[in-house]
Image: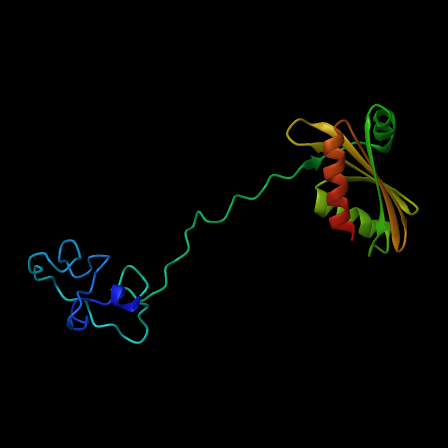
Amino acid sequence: PYTTLFRSAAEKPANSGGAAMDLLDLDGGGGGNGNGAAPAAAPSPPAPSAGDDLMLLDMGDASPPSPSPAAAPPPAQPLLAPLQVTTAQVGSMWGSLAAEQKVSMQTSCASCQDLMTRLEGGLNVHPVEIIGMEGIAAGQVAPAGAPCFLHGKLAPPRIDILVRTQDPGVAQRVAELCQRALA
């Protein structure tokens, strides 16, 4: 029943008693109800081959449609940008940052160097200093430039991260990024 809608005029079976309705007016009959004037002679489409997909609207091209180049969304801007500061500068600004978010979790990080590498790559922050099994990293919230500091304390297989910044929403998002980067 549905295949009759997609057959060319040359392929349609002869009308056997009941009027076949051409809903898409593929036979060029003007209205598709079988009562119109004789259809004008139209060029016959090429005969379908085994590879043709009769559901494609362009019956002459059997190649699959190519994906649109604009289909992929543009990459998202990172939340943080690296902030080049010293440990002393972090210490002097730490208390002025009102929002704090703590993360305690299992991690596959085995060393503080690994911790800092993952924070740098996953969160786009600057590694400030490693002291024993603790690490300090600094970022600035893009595009405003407000500071965001991270303090990690590693005791494999666990890690505790403390995020300090001005905005509680940013602190929460950075904590979530830490969980992804350090799992």
